[in-house]
Image (cartoon, rainbow, N blue to C red; front, side, top):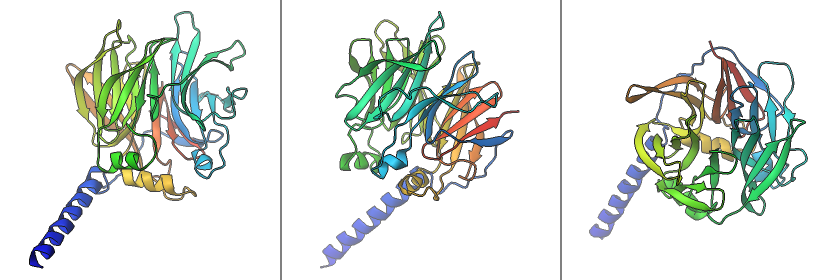
Length: 350
């Protein structure tokens, strides 16, 4: 009996230690001090603006929008890609109204060719599986659908980055599809995600063993690729082989937060949205009313000499915006896109 009681006691202690470690790793013990630079106002019309990217020279943004709460409630409504100009009074313009009603976009990436032709890729979580959609911008400014890509390796695609009009990288945040195994990945912090490369003909794995590979982006010259890992709480920098698409790890920057999407500004600095308390994000996600709020954080990563300098540009406890997944910058304009909220947040930097 004593051995049995001793064994039970050891088990209880082990479970308690695991629970405390899990809460600590998720950031639940952090003390947050909200702050922001400049004035921020909500912008309606684009629910669940999970990913945002600016045209590099024209000053307007493309916004990936989807009502994920409606989908979770079993009443999905078509998502869409919008064009939004933060400098004017024009309301957001839907660009994909003629596309499939089974469109639920997630990560997006824009490629602008030297002749100005725009190609936009979007991760699409359809009712029949995950796809990658390729659009071109037509003469009227609306999107023309060019291609749908499917592959069994698109297990849990999250974000992608276009290298040109034919090639891109895409992150799988998990190694398993939604279900019990995916939940175990999260809570046991198993590194089973990966990054795929599409070379214009086929998908191939180029990075494996990632702890929730989330955001991905590239340098302007295409020789460097950046990947965030939400559970890994880090940013990893890779050298890219232009001939093969192979990626070689160069450096990892610990960020101590549940990092999400990556956007670059005109100077090449990285702007990364993050979830400092991951269980608050989960609670916000599982609350159909959205009243349980989750904090949002924006980190700026700058390359200085041979090192990377990290600064916190924005931190909110969920009052201004909840669970922002992306922070896109153009000039003095900073757009924060939440995963579930009905409004994105437009801020004016000093």
